Length: 40
Image (spheres, rainbow, N blue to C red):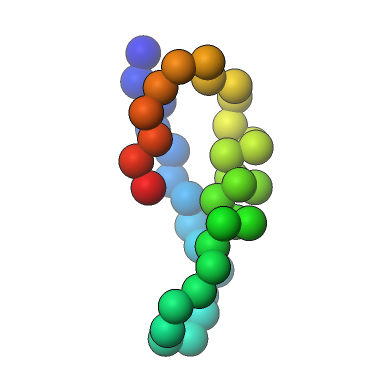
């Protein structure tokens, strides 16, 4: 079974930014998966 989802990050100024909180929040909204591979 394949599952595909799109994550949209908030706009930021140029530079390096930590996005871990936004990614974790998006993953929490997805249904639980016991085995898989995540490409970010």
